Length: 571
Image 1 (cartoon, one colour):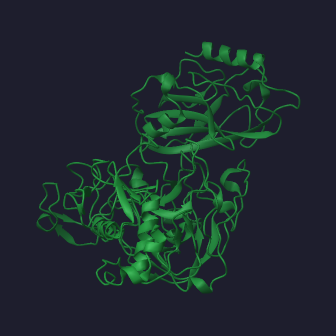
Image 2: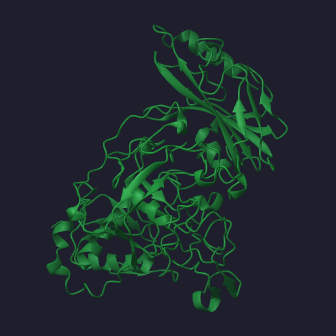
Image 3: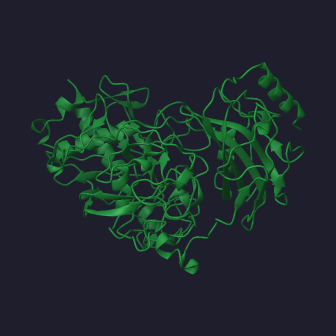
């Protein structure tokens, strides 16, 4: 018997009233301008929060809190009793299936789920903390189980993991539903966080938070809804910190949702599509039919909301998009100890027009975030468009003054052949200005987004803070990392496989401290440097150039020799 056939109402009526059903609240139908209103460009995956586009959504219910460990444990024991799941080597799977749903403590030291061979239980007193160490299928299966408890239709086909958006059962929120709900109705102006734009660490479990759960063994989650504005007491929570009390601020948004920033990332239903905003439907967008391939060549589901573990404000900006590939310095092998989820229940989904995931469209990113999509993209001033004419009204520092340029080519211009494998293979001279106060060093990366992967040609870090430019064929400045052309140290000039315009991106990062790397320079690739800089990037600036290789020119030994010569000249 399979999971779907087991979860029929006739089999679960005896336990329907016993389930700890998540609390939800109604989100009214409406529209909003989805995307980043503050000019942020993620250093790892570019301007994927643009173009800003108008989205209209039908009403839906959403969980006020993340699903807790106790709630998920109840599901596991219910599914186990009906022989729907099984445990293998500490991992929980659908009976006879290969998709990992959740880890027990035997599989991961960070899991809060214990398995004694006959029953699941919660460890470490974390009943009210968000469930962690789960995978996306584990969240989808929970939604199916919860639907069965309420005699609602099941949304997920567990053989294909397709979601039926025209069923009014529990499912994960779409990316648009999540952001619309997370904004809490705040649109004038749009906020940077669920409650507004004040980066207040007493409202959320961010790395900057001083809350008393940030002690002892990781993961440092807090109970769901902990940041409610009350004075909390150690006697009530038995937290590991020494403080006897902790004063929280109210981190709920306008819809009364908690932990929409920080604590634990939340899985969404959508595949992560880097360019999806450029072709997203305007009505109830269901996400792309396929996900963008990440550095390991695999697609990943999206996650939203930030976390307790890393990044400025825990990456908890309300518009922040992230594929679940990114989990820490050891991507994609870092623990799933800061991912959770909350549920959505659509209203009268059967009466809606048929909704299917959006076919993937190719998007030319040469223009970067200056593209137009489903709505107009405001100029990247770093200021919300509602207050663009009043700089003092912006709650976020305007970082648009940090600019990268070159005396050899304008932004968006054609890269001279001298700086490619078709010419002298020189490094491009660069200049920058307007770095934020507190900059201690710089780093430079040159990369190209190919259809199947990200390629990098130049990694240079530990550039002193008093350096404001790099000459052509720079030497003895900073430390060189490797390149993806040959995985060896040094600059690799672009060596396109054929004619046609390619876009190359130079990025300079202003850092609050030098990146700490535990590997030698020849092993410092783009990902390693980005991971080492995480949490220390004060600002970044890009210079985009294009190059069209002359027709008939192909990569040959001459180009390879030029590349070898460049590597020998590097310090």
